[in-house]
Amino acid sequence: MPRYHELLASLRSAFPQPVSDPVHDGYVVFSILRALDQVDALKSQAPVLGEAVEPDYERAREFRLDEVGRPLEAVIPKLVRTLQGMFIWGHPRSQINVVPNPTIASIIGYLLPLIYNPNLVSEESSRLFAEAEVRVAAMLADLVSYEPEKARGLFTFGGTGTFLYGVKVGLEKACPGAGRSGLREDAVIIASDQSHYGCWTVASWLGIGQDNVLRVPTNLDNSIDLEALEALLGDSIRSGRKIAAIVATMGSTDAFGIDDLQAIIAIRDRLAAEFKLSYRPHVHADAVIGWAWSVFNDYSFLDNSLGFRGRTVRALAAAHHRMQHLKLADSVGVDFHKTGYVPYISSLVLFANGEDLGLIARQRNSMPYLFQSGDHHPGMVTLETSRAAGGVMAAMANLLLLGKEGYRALLGHAVEMAEVLREGIESHPNLTVLNGDNVGPVTLFRAYPDHVNTFTVKDRERTDSTMRDELRAYNDYNRRIFQRVQTEALSGQGVVLSLTDCYRHTDYGEPMVALKSYVLSPFTDDGRMQSMIQHVLAARSEAMKGNAAGGGWMSA
Ligand SMILES: *Cc1c(COP(=O)(O)O)cnc(C)c1O
Image (cartoon, rainbow, N blue to C red; front, side, top):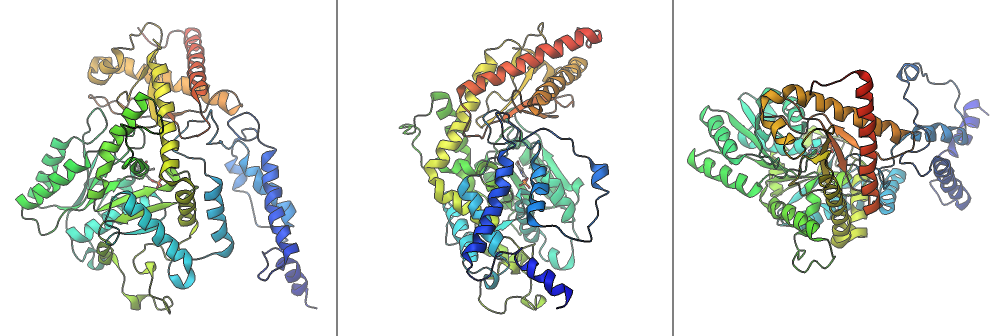
């Protein structure tokens, strides 16, 4: 027998069997269980798995492919090792960022296509998975009140991908033929200064150019300044530039700022008419975070049947008030992997008018090896050729599992916990909330030394340029507090928070650092939120001591 035949025999057992073999199926499932079992050994009460190990990139670069492979049993521990020190996003003391913990249903949703490997490029290679994508898109179109008969949606490689689709279609509307013959005109993307940096990525990759992303100032609630938007839009049109897209940020990354989409649409329509534009500038709603609030579109805040507290109802209703207008946008980006409790990556871009996608379709004859049968071929328009179905199935799983009510309870709880935190912070003299009128699950706050009046300091810091040195010193102070909290957290104590280097720029151009709590975990409760404040205060005391020892870090 040739040597390779022996190898092949053992390699065959490394695959799930193509025909029924219950004993081997047991081996597959048990191998997965073994891996999970080894992960379980890393769990404790701490918000991280095992012990924090610092990544060693030097050593990592020295890795080489072995001549001879090893058995599955030996591979599993090597894989599980990766989880050492990994954050447990769903831990009640973990409030790091907009990263959810996935449900069991969404994990199974992801797992099935991993085994059977559909490719969403076409129904030929994905069968009912292709239909599942259409189902999820239809559910979401209905959720945001698009006309389901006209709307179309595609899953793509992330929120940035949804952005790319929106702007790509908008660019083709503004500069017809750009996809074919290249961009020959000056085109701009207009977005707020709180919009995601994905704007720049997209501008760069589409050849629009990063310098052609025009950033509009924001109001103190982090929503776009409408007058400034109108002025900038008018100027751009007058100077002969094409509007590739106007981006409405529907839930900003750091502060959950929500633009007034209805007003943006009105401005767009007014200027398109006034300047007799040959195209209607495309409005893309970057709702990768905010989309989930659409589940409140038909919730009666008056009856409040789920029993949220007054402050929570007010916050949810305020977010809903803006989010209900998503239906007015030409396209909407949705990340299930942010506020949808689904694993990465699960991103959907929806178009109000599915025919818009025709603008970016390829010619069929350019893809000779595909589409031999069937007539549903998303690959005619998608950026990707191969497209995994995991994101679709995970999203589907959660939509079925949770329904609108489940999502309302999860998001409502997150917002309620953020409200508890804000109350706690506001009642402490050394802490202050920066995004006080915020209506989402994220709280940005700062700590100050004892002598500082926290009622007035944040406004002075923001507006008074003579405060520059103090502002910088308080930035450092909060960075140090964060370091302490972080070090404690990685050793299994305390809470995991995050830090943003620039919550906003001050009026005189300095970045304001903020501690950040992003609550998504359904496992958090009132007590946990209170203890979080205690941890921050303890870290604050330590930071104060450090200063005294270091010999005065600030000339007061
Ligand atoms: C996270 C985020 C993005 C980018 O989405 P990814 O899924 O991380 O690619 C875009 N816009 C906003 C507002 C975001 O928060």
